[in-house]
Length: 466
Image 1: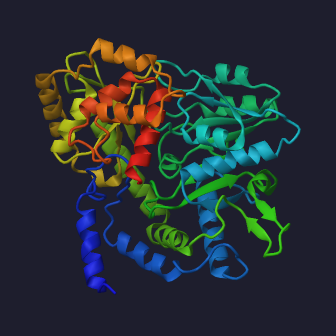
Image 2: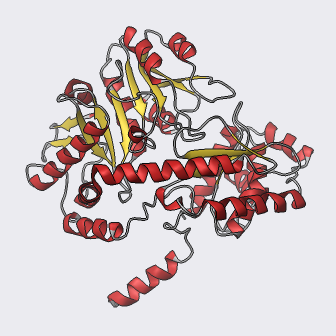
Image 3: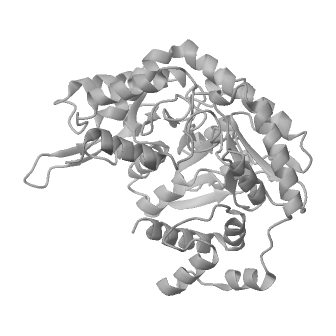
């Protein structure tokens, strides 16, 4: 057996190559409250319940109490009533999956169900459509504001529509869809309306924004992630339904086998009690006043960064973000944002590149948290310096013949060997080892149509996990 200290030392060495999860320098994937001792509390609570199995709440009633407490806290924050119910899931994607599943199961008479969503809705809904056989009707958004168009959304609803989706905010641009008119249009047609508040659900109740929660007539379900702005450890989200009848469709039971009757509220069966216990402990410790303060800090920091970006020549903010997410693009063609991302990485910041999509140009995504409060000047100074360096380097060029060849490829007919060649050309070969600078890789990927990009990255994922 390997000594415990040696095992932990090896793990620490492996972790040394990761992006930092604290300090506000990784502006995607992680959420840092900067509250002293919060991580330690979560770790200890997780350890107390990590071996407990949420598969059967009658065997482990502590988890039943914890889940009901967590759901009640979320419902209270998001305009719930005495009839509001919910389920704790493993993350925002699972919450969205279950919202779609419940909607589909509520309309068994619809042979070919569809859901209406703005083209800016999270990819989790496309995943749900793929898994559950629900057709996506993606409605164009306003090309300047990137907000959903209520009239266009209403017009897209048909007799086959089982769900309408809005985002508060959308991940890509951080803008809030107009919930009230869209929910009203869905209600008039007898269709459910889901509010994807995975990002904003724990922040926007403390911001000056239009109502978006269960106080809005027609809203039937809301997803909100605890491992985002509730600053809980990874692996906890909540899916709320206005009442128990709406929730029933995503429950699963199977007694037609000789073992125990399988009964699941989520896509998982066995569920460790660790993430739930950690979330419960963090929510109890921070409390309502604490979350109000954390939300105000993150919102104020986001405003400072958004306004500061406006003062950097060559950059502009897309749309009018009202929450804590910001998308930044270039105003001209003398540099590209992919190089800016590399330059920021060289200065120990991570900003997330996003490819162009319809009216949205290539941009950099910034997720601002409470940990960014106070370090805005350093971030903006490094962003300005990164733009200067990107201008000096010039835009990444993809040869026209290469772009034409990529655009002509048919992902469905390519062989594994041909995919391997494309991955190598994009800098994604070599056993899955990425180059230190990604601008040229991203430029090649940007030249590929979305369906080809998807296939390339799926193949690359297979290379990584081999």
